[in-house]
Amino acid sequence: MSNTGELANGYIKGGDSYIDSTSLNLWFTSILTNKSLVGIHSEEIQLISMFIKKLSGKSAITAIASGTFSADLLHAAAVENTFDRMALLNGLVSYHSIIE
Image (cartoon, rainbow, N blue to C red; front, side):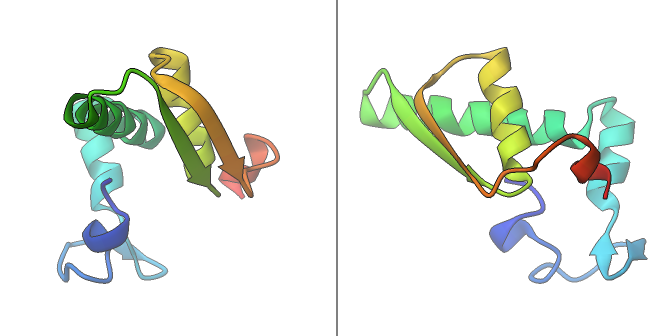
């Protein structure tokens, strides 16, 4: 997923805007594509789940998310219910906590 793991800021140097050592290029991309960051991540989760289903041949899969990715997984599941089960670990308490 974009801005995480190997695609996170620490591995790929560059970019033209940083706030507290965080690159804002993904945020700028969301403005240009008219999609929110949660929308971008939930779309990527849907693509990953379709890839896993096609590769494994299974009809139901289980998804696990932690921290701020809990909101992304919930949005992905609300748009297209592709998950048999979901586990949300250390999820956000409220949408207000996303802003904080």
